[in-house]
Image (cartoon, rainbow, N blue to C red; front, top):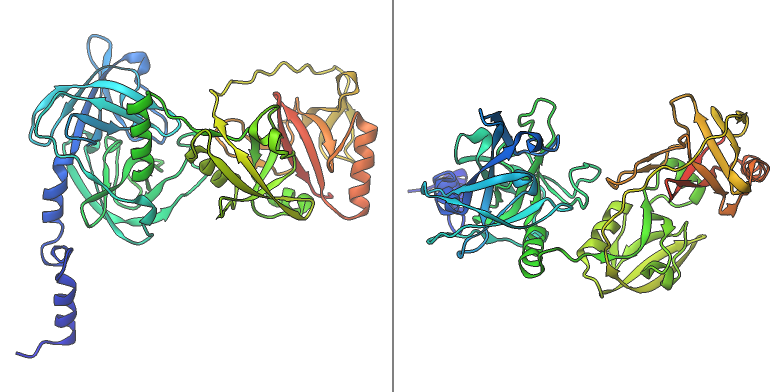
Length: 452
């Protein structure tokens, strides 16, 4: 019998390790992997029931006793009873139960969790568990087929199919250290902590969040890469916490305005250097732009933050830094990241304001306390000028804000309005943007201003 070219192609694609995808859909693949995904049921006190806006845990209505129940998903990490899920699934829970695919239920103990990655490790006393195989998520490619397995809306184990839509989307604001696999496989409330698997039945990610205006799937879901989840889980089981590298710098995104002022379009702008930090000891300075780390390109501050977080304390890293148009290499030994402290605004605002619309349009400023700089009193009423943006999830920047203290311009310290005017006038004469250094709530940022 003579086969058509189309039939030959079909048979060729149906042979080998993943041939069943064409011959029988995903049935064999699902049968192999669903025992490694569990349903998580939580009970919280009413005041702890909230979930982050983009998280996909699924809280239900309250009980007569003033408690609320919630639903989520998890993956079997080991055959001795360890389960991985998202921290937001179990946060604030007074009781957590795990239901296996075969229907057995167990009370679960929360062993440890990590907020920056949104991962929690649970422990159940169960036999016959079937842990999922973790893939090397660094090899995931945009366009490859994936399945999402979880417990959406509490209806029970559900499987959806899609592709990898993007890798490492940034500026999501889901968690402190963001590095996600984006997929169009349908994920909904209750899928949090569930599995994103490839066509070999390997775990490539932990489903964590969706981008939605309705609360349901819009085809934009995010999964924490398997490598990150595994590393964090191993740290939590070994040390009870995750030890992350610490460089000791404040980072800022390079916006178009800052690019004009700096002459640099990509990289991570160092806005501040902590005293006695690894960065300070190595000689890094405010205004430096980090372009690479250990041979990997740093295209923005988000990537550098992830690279540093991935490195362990004590690791020696090589940073490629651009300073005043020249490139320099720095070898730095990282410390351990300290617990972040919340800054408080202790600034005062003098009653009298001097308006300098010809210098900073729409801004009301005055000399800072003790001649220490220029204090911003108002900006376009409630508006902003400039265009610097920092989306690190801690302190956001969007141009100047009331209460900012301008301490430098074009990398020259300014003690008051006259010094600031001289620097701005020089930039205007050169038809160049002005690079302002500001102190906001004790943290240094840069703002770029174009000639109006």
